[in-house]
Structures are given as C-alpha cells and as structure tokens.
Amino acid sequence: QDQTLDTHDIIIVGGGQMGLSLGYYLRRAKADFLILDREDGPGGAWRHGWNSLRLFSPAGYSSLPGWMMPPPHHEGYPTRDDVLAYLHAYEQRYDLPIRRPVRVETIEPGGAGLEISTNHGKMTAKMVVSATGTWSHPYVPDIAGRASFEGSQVHSAHYVGPEDYAGQTVLVVGGGNSGAQIMAEIAPIARALWVTTQEPIFLPDDVDGRVLFERAIARMKGGPSDVPVGGIGDIVMVPPIKAARDRGDLSSVRPFDRMTPTGVVWPDGSNMAVDAIIWCTGFRPALAHLVGLGVVEGDGKVVVESQRSVKEPHLWLAGYGDWTGPGSATLMGAARTARDMAHALTNAINS
Ligand SMILES: Cc1cc2nc3c(=O)[nH]c(=O)nc-3n(C[C@H](O)[C@H](O)[C@H](O)COP(=O)(O)OP(=O)(O)OC[C@H]3O[C@@H](n4cnc5c(N)ncnc54)[C@H](O)[C@@H]3O)c2cc1C
Image (cartoon, rainbow, N blue to C red; front, side, top):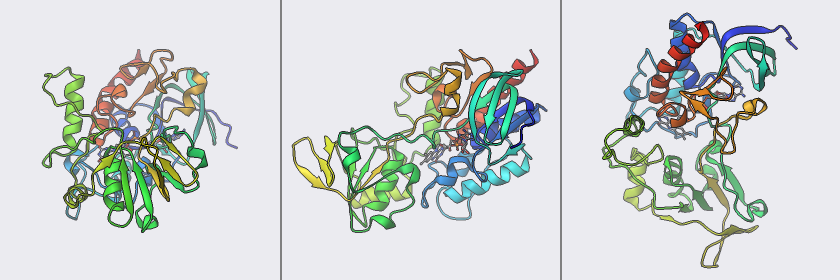
C-alpha cells in the first residue's frame, strides 16, 4: 500500500471527456495538476457504451479543445469505437498526467485544502475537481413489485446488444435517446413495447445533436424565448431511429402500474407476461465520493456557484449537466465548460 502523500495544486477526479478537456487548459496554463481515473484505460463512460452506440452529433461538433475529432472512415456519425480512439489519442497528444486505475473513495478537508483517499493511498490538493460523470450511477424508478420480477432486467448502462432478446417479450422503458436507439434495434427481433411517461419528443429529421447543445447555451444565456424548448433528452433522428420510425416501430405506451414475478400489470388491471425489461431511465450524478464532505444535497446534487461548491470552496464540479456548465454533459459542452473553469481555477490557486 503506497502511503506517500502526493500533493498537487489541482486534482481532477475522472478521466473522461470532461477531465481531459480541463486537463488541456490546465496544461496550457502550466498548472500543477493530476487526473485520477478508475477505469483500466481511456474513454470514460464510452468504454461501457453498447455495441451499436453512435454519437448524435457529427465529429466536428463532438470535439474536445485543441483538436477536432477526425471524421470517421465510414458513413454516418462517429461510433462508440471512434470516440474511444479519439479520447485515447487525445490523452497521448497532450500528454495529460493521468493515473489509472485509481478509485477515489472519500474526500475530506485536510492538507492545503482537501485530502483524497484512494485505493492506492492518500493525496492532498488545494483544489479538487469532481468530473466523475453519471454512468456509474444509473437510475431505475422504484416500481411496486420490481424486486419480485423473475425475468431479466438491465439498465441501458449495461446493455450490450439485441442478440439476447431474440423472440422474447421485452419492455424498453424510457423516452429519451437511449430508449429510442435501443427500441429501434430490439423491435425487429423481439415482441417489444416502448414504455414512456409521455409521448416522446422527436427532433426534426434534419436537426442533429449539436442543436441540443446550442439550445442549452441559448437558454443559459437567457436567449430569446422562442428558442424551442427541448433538452438533451429530445430524440435525435439518427439513421437507425428514422428507419425504425418508417417501419412503425416507435409507437409508445404509458407506464404500467406495478410488476409481478412474471410480468407487469397495466392501469386497466390487465396482466402481461414479460421476459425482460431494459431500463433506459437515465442517470444521476456519481457523487458517492463526496458524501463525506457533507455537500451532497437531497436532490443528489451539490450547491455550486460557477461550478464551485458553496459549502466547500476547495471543491469544484463539472460535466454533470447544465447545473455544472451549460451543456457540459456533452462533448462540445465539456470543451466550453473547461475553458472557463480552468481560468477560474488557476485564479483561485494564485489568489
Ligand atoms: C447513451 C449515451 C449517449 C450519448 N451520446 C452523446 C452524443 O452523441 N454526443 C455528446 O456530446 N454526448 C453524448 N452523451 C453524453 C456525454 O457525452 C457522456 O455522458 C460522457 O460520457 C460524459 O463525460 P464525462 O467526462 O462527464 O463523464 P464520464 O465519461 O462518465 O467520465 C467520468 C470518469 O470518471 C471516472 N470515475 C467515476 N467515479 C470515480 C471515482 N470515484 N474515482 C476515480 N474515477 C472515477 C469514471 O470511471 C469515468 O472514467 C451520451 C451519453 C449517453 C449515456
């Protein structure tokens, strides 16, 4: 067990796109920083994306600071593997100081600012940035009887591909991009039903993911009220989704009331036998490592001002969504958030 106390001005927890983007600007500012990441290799949550996962934004609009994502050598938007290759090359290109696999377990006040306990010893830093994303904190709604269900259940965070569901009766629960993309590939091979709390919102066919980011920015800037409502959850009509719509595979039903050992019960009292449920019900910020600091509120977030914790000013947060930087839970948003944050961080260190 390595006990030497490593000290840095800034430690970033999380080596996904948000951590890397921040690393790029801190490197340019010649700051003393280190990135800790618990994965075995580069890519953050993209390492866990399902096999057919594709970006909903073109390469040019999915780039981190300093280097545009190269256009893919194939039709359509970049695949999961294209993103992984880009993030891997990005780390090497900017020679970012990353330690892997290192899991941050707790953070407490100590040293020049905060003391970080990891599975490889302790470290201290004047400032800590939490950029741990949401993938490791999938959300599944608490529905009556869920624990009794004997069929298979998986969250989209762990979904791999449609093969295992061939010929089965499957419920895909959740009306966002993940729900739509997974329903599109399950429907042709299974008796699949798409369960959504309300009618899903599909973007116009010619609108891609960059618009979701631009809308987030416009809203954050208090832009003109005619900016169409619609957040990161609106469904981008990537080719597999268009094809599924044209096949008539994207109709949806409202939620069931409860679950039983063999299936679900609908609001009209009727029962349905189900083999599998795929929960595409989103994520929550992955903040378990911050609980010891007493900053995680009842809603699972941290009170921040310009991404700096109000209760613990040595702590900063980035990449968890608009509350930690406009559109910051997107590739393009991470780049923009990182620029402003690196500036504020180095000022705070030098003040
Ligand atoms: C299905 C899906 C599709 C998406 N499609 C797009 C898209 O097309 N375009 C787009 O711009 N965005 C898209 N996003 C959103 C966004 O780009 C991703 O969520 C992205 O992974 C967020 O990056 P991040 O760096 O904030 O978090 P992550 O990529 O999750 O990286 C966080 C890192 O922190 C590490 N970590 C977590 N806890 C600890 C700890 N305690 N100690 C040490 N390390 C830790 C994790 O292992 C991970 O490596 C999509 C998201 C999902 C889920």
